[in-house]
Image 1 (tube, rainbow, N blue to C red):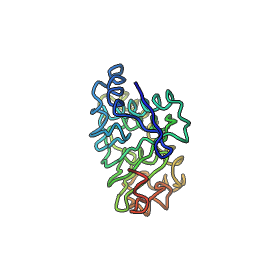
Image 2: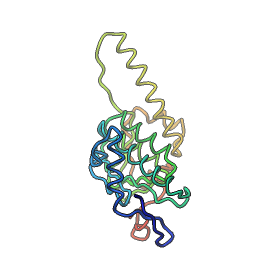
Image 3: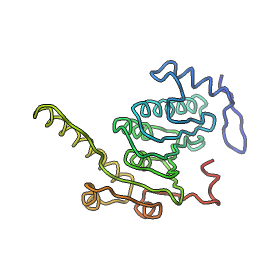
Length: 221
């Protein structure tokens, strides 16, 4: 079962957590914890996102829910919970999976930190800005755009798909306005572009909260 100890005023979980997570995943649609992303460090609550594939959304959601369950069962106050850290080095990918990860972050009571290690592009950008606390390596980069799609079929199917995608674009717009200092006017000016930022520019626009330096590096370990 779950064991708990106090160490330097922080809660820690013993190595049985891996077995608990696998048992939890066996009850869900995710059978292998390694499919959560390219790599998961279970004991330290770290998840690494590269290309965002269909399985990424359900996997990351399962991981975040699991630790919310653990923290709730241990009756750990939200302010004392060990954060889940999502390390992002991503060129983007599946839009539906991106929204699933975003929703999982929004619903998590256990803090979820996002860290841009090098690239937070497209879907990776939108996931990054939703972190409860957002870190970025000093040389990391960001790319905002509203995505791309390929549609086919008759005219009515095309119109239906276009209307649906328009709703998704509006959700992306609201996410950016809610989580950054980007104004509606600036967003509408840039939304048709590939808009690139370095870390300093992203900090000025309210995307980055903490630039990682040797002095604060321990915060993301």
